[in-house]
Amino acid sequence: MLPARFDYIAASSVDEAIAAKAEGGDETRFLAGGQSLLPMMKLRFATPSKLVDINRIAGLDAIEHHNGHLHVGALVRHADIAASAAVSGAVASAAPWISDPLVRNLGTLCGSVAHCDPEGDWNSVLLATGADVIAQGPSGSRSIAIGDFVQDFFTSSLNDDEMVTAVRIPVPSGPSGGSYQKLERKVGDYATVGVAAHLELAADGTISAAGVAMTSVAPINRKATEAEALLVGNAPSAELFAEAGEAAAAAAEPRDDVRGSARWKRQVVAAFTGRALAAAAEQAQG
Ligand SMILES: Cc1cc2nc3c(=O)[nH]c(=O)nc-3n(C[C@H](O)[C@H](O)[C@H](O)COP(=O)(O)OP(=O)(O)OC[C@H]3O[C@@H](n4cnc5c(N)ncnc54)[C@H](O)[C@@H]3O)c2cc1C
Image (cartoon, rainbow, N blue to C red):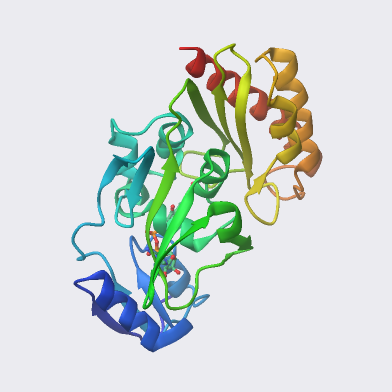
């Protein structure tokens, strides 16, 4: 199908893009990589009256370390992250798993975050790593913890007149590691099950901070908070990770579908949580 009729402007600055969005309200959409928006428009699931193309705005395509954080700008493509030497842990692990090269070359991490698709991989990685979303509106910029940003199925706490200009991921000063484990039916598919894990270790080798979050097994990307609590303060071990896997599986709410039964998906969550944590611990122990 063809999209419904729409107006189009190519913004040359963040201020111009925000002003155009503020004027049009929720009938106006930002266009980043177009890898979620354009398919939805072609299917007429989305019928915006205007697109504000942000692709020509300078300065939004950087991945850089700043004040103990990794900043990923709004025009950083999935492929840029996969190729970047600046990323590590769960972020580096997840990037090659986003769809296929065509989607990775155009789609952006910030677009994926804003889209809030519970089958999208990035919001789980950001929940596990404790990231913030930087939102800019007509009256300035604010930082939103990813747990507050992800509100519901395809719903975020971004205001209609705000644009995501970057995502900020903390970079631990001590030993840390992370991993993203994804089960897909074939290369390029959305996750049947995905699990992101992030671990930080104290000087005595015990776990000082832990993040575990799941993709495609709940109405939203979901943090496995009980699994995280089990991990903190303990020494990494296969038994501990198996226990955390069971806690994550209990927190999942998978559904039976063509990709498998809910019962089987819970088992995958348990196994993948264990694997992701083992990989994270191995990295942290270096
Ligand atoms: C065939 C296919 C397979 C895919 N497989 C996967 C997969 O396995 N895993 C996965 O995670 N994703 C997958 N995706 C989705 C892909 O990752 C998209 O790139 C991503 O969801 C959206 O990023 P985008 O830059 O393309 O955003 P767009 O499509 O341009 O925009 C998506 C939405 O976010 C809004 N938006 C975009 N940028 C901003 C911003 N800076 N501020 C505020 N709002 C913004 C838009 O207005 C729109 O509503 C797949 C897509 C396709 C087409």
